[in-house]
Amino acid sequence: MTFYAALVQPFVEYGFMRRSLVACLALGIGCGPVGTLLVLRRMSLIGDAMAHALLPGAALAFVITGFSLLAMSAGGFIAAMIVALLAGAVTRLTSQREDASFAAFYLIALALGVMLISTRGSSVDLMHVLFGTILAVDDASLLLIAAVASTTLLLLAAIYRPLVVECFDPGFLRSVGARGAVYHALFLALVVLNLVAGFHALGTLMAVGLMMLPATAARFWVNEVWSLALVAGLIAFVCGFVGLLLSYHADVPSGPAIVLTAGALYLGSLLCGRRDSVLYRWWQQRQHRQA
Amino acid sequence: MSAVRLRNLTLTYSRHPAVHHLSGEFAQGSMTAVVGPNGAGKSTLLGAIAGRITAATGSIELDTRREQIAYLPQQEALDRSFPIRAIDVVILGHWSKVGALRAIVPALRERALHALAAVGLTGFEQRSVSELSVGQFQRVLFARVLLQDAHLILLDEPFSAIDARTTADLLKIIRRWHDEARTVIAVLHDLEQVRAHFPHTLLIAREPIAWGETEQVLRRDNLLRARAMAESWDEQAPLCARGAA
Image 1 (cartoon, rainbow over the protein chains, first blue to last red):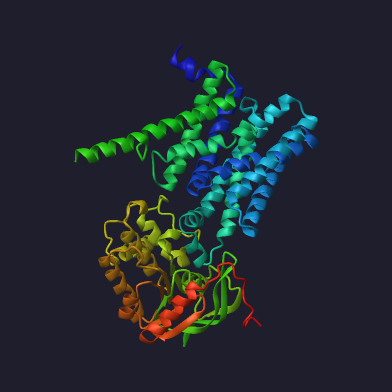
Image 2 (cartoon, rainbow over the protein chains, first blue to last red; image 1 turned 45 degrees about the vertical axis):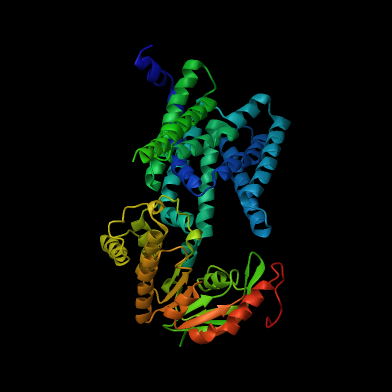
């Protein structure tokens, strides 16, 4: 097989492959910076919980309207935001920590969503909602994913400074009179928007994959917020590209192929990254012993 | 003339009482140490003056705008692993001028470099905060306070786990703030340091024990009373109603 046939031809020949690749690029642009900030804010697992929490809203919209892009997106967004608000309220009103309340609510939401879809849809519908069908992304879905990526970049540009300060030194933000809670809420809305976009391509169980794995892998290569966001976005796109080719040539499901590629890149970074990786630490200890 | 006036102030921490019925005032341009046993409510009081904690009852009256307050938190409250450079932390001191959106113009960056130089950290501008020692990081935070150019400066345990040389350098900066007639309130543990450098002291043990000139406040009987109160605290006690009306 030639280089062209392996890497380029599938995208030249098939429109669905090109659309999927553009979807991966748009997801990478949005999920890269959002995932980076989620990791830096130590909210990785909360991101996962919110990805699952959007299911009952999307499922309810599916039961009422069928596979309507806008209705399922709006339903998913509203459900995930409700779960985020409820989990936040439980943390404020009781002694329970936020991660525990998020876990409780997302499990309830996930079970409710699966049950709702089962009442009307087939097992194929359920698989579609849980694992997505990035190869079936149509123009409308592509526009939605691109719009989410654009909104993400614009809003992040506007709230970047307070978000970074709220993450590093929340007390300072409060002491200068800035409303950290507002920025936190806007950021959570961005997380949910990107998860909704990811949901259409990768399903509720995999949506968070392109958000978290590239962002955690990037931590082993660079060490500034802007470069972390850039590298995470780039890794997400590369994972989409490689995952789609893997899916095409090996005839395996595309969503899991993309997320597994991201997983492989994360493990590779963990072992060989230029910052704080296993190999880097071993090399430093060796140098220290020789000195 | 007072910079901060407390009226029958009661504060809670994690829904439990931390400071009871505190009344008094910090004079304009004064330099006051807040001391007391661990858990006495010192940091809670400072956080309330900074506007971070809401009073359960009573009030705090400030003779200055919120932008004119600089607050230096305990280092544990900050995420030292966060990927941010020393110069970017210092530049945050310009918040009242740039807020969330305005650009950092070269003149502001230049002033931040001067502030870093003033705390002895020339050449450390591009270092990530995770690469700095505890003392160097505290110097960075002091540089940020310098840029804030505040009338009221609140310092929460500024010398905790700091080496002697850094402590001496930072004490000089605090002394300069006092000479410039800024009001300084610092939570401290080292009573000898307080006696040597702070003219006024507030001794609290969830309730005010004494407030005034340092030598009068840090008398043996006051310190024993504070310790005795600390040993009798009930962590689950409800808020008392005394003076709430």
